[in-house]
Image (cartoon, rainbow over all chains, first blue to last red):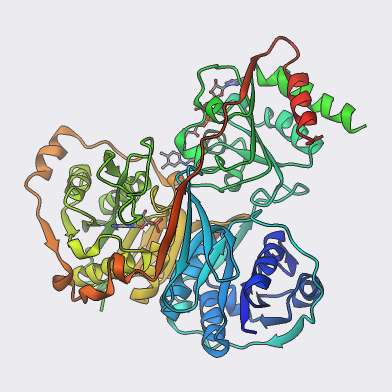
Length: 317
Length: 271
Ligand SMILES: Cc1cc2nc3c(=O)[nH]c(=O)nc-3n(C[C@H](O)[C@H](O)[C@H](O)COP(=O)(O)OP(=O)(O)OC[C@H]3O[C@@H](n4cnc5c(N)ncnc54)[C@H](O)[C@@H]3O)c2cc1C
Ligand SMILES: Nc1ncnc2c1ncn2[C@@H]1O[C@H](COP(=O)(O)O)[C@@H](O)[C@H]1O
């Protein structure tokens, strides 16, 4: 059975859930093989094996992460050339899509981005135009390269060998032209990852300030949710940029999205309108975000949200 | 080979900005039933919003360092409107890649046409937006960098050029990376980077006299059989409209709005 390469999303071996989802999809097509670039293999391999990785290719050299995107594409290109996999699956993060993009050019392969499902024959399902149209596409040239959105399927326990195979790559000069000279982490620890969370609670301009995000965070914590923000809130500096949901922020598709004090501009909707269930709290009944609401309350978020948080606490016992 | 900035005798920087014409994002988009490509005829077309930020950044770099800004767009006839808009913002010249054979091109082919056109122009800096609102792929900048063998600095919320060096902040999952390279380089921007200017009346008048070069596939040296819908490396097999979501319930807060939401969440088994 041909291998299906899965690029592992991880931080120092702390593997993101989306990788396990990709392994579950890979198993439909062939034999899943994880590709881990960077440090942390020892920490990562047991989880990858539990989720079906027969092989874990490990490329761990400092220069692979000292330059953005290009080195990862070269590692994958080498494996594609050597192993002739049935497909390559990559998470639809901003960087994942760029790695896939460069790989497509290097390998002479077609690419499909933002799939929400992949069949055994490599047919990818995409949800376009804000979920209004469902498209099925297939790569027709080369090794199918498919990027898949987080939360598209569930991780599956499927014990496999997880045999470590070390890979060394001689980087091209072109891959080393851009250098990362500093890495700034602005994490807001403790909460689920925004792109992967089952529940997202977001705040917009209506939250009024940095302190106002306290009520948003309290609701999020009562629901084990991630916190998101509109551009108005990130631009004002009330919440860090990487929590922005929307066209130029993250695209999320959680089971439940709760929008508070967000008007629903097209650029914000682009990042959340395929959420399964949407709750809206806004004091303006005309706010366009209500068009997406499964349930909405016209009211002041500073009274509605804390009451909801309290109620969730009571009901969870 | 791209023109590399010369140190002393010619320090002028040439910036090529890639802008795409897209359907107005408020308009309802559909696929044309004939060939499952985006039906561009049925909706108003505008400049991809993020590309205005790339244009603005190019103009600011020119204002700070001197040089020349060329706007590059691949698209059907009406893409001239988008090129004119960029010229009226302040670009010096335009290049329009126009060929019926390009209809239905995927990102792979688009990046090929753009890369060839950029090579023909010569550039010290290539600026792009980070995402087009119709394709929403965010892959063209990386593909252009790959094809040109140039450093890729993408998703930037700041760009500084100092002599032959470019330094950017690349927005990441966790914060940002400071990324540096030597020119020539490919840079894509996010909307945090600046606030684009509106074309002035003077700018609109001046734009009418600025040169726009039109290039077809032959002019770019691209084999027509390698691009367009028939040659795409991925293909849409079927497309179906999803039934619109049923309208939700919206209630006025009567002092129990939070409880009402909790009731809804309980009924839906979220709590
Ligand atoms: C190129 C480009 C890219 C963009 N990308 C993004 C993106 O990725 N993500 C994004 O979000 N935006 C993006 N935007 C910005 C977008 O156009 C909107 O400006 C932004 O989403 C507005 O944020 P908001 O809804 O929080 O603010 P507003 O539109 O100002 O809405 C605030 C809402 O809060 C309500 N409100 C106020 N006080 C209260 C209260 N006490 N209780 C309840 N409700 C209250 C108001 O009724 C109003 O509806 C982008 C724009 C551009 C041009
Ligand atoms: N047809 C095109 N003409 C000019 N620039 C383009 C074209 N398509 C994409 N781009 C550029 O590539 C960026 C990213 O587009 P995409 O990869 O399609 O999301 C855009 O913001 C533009 O700067």
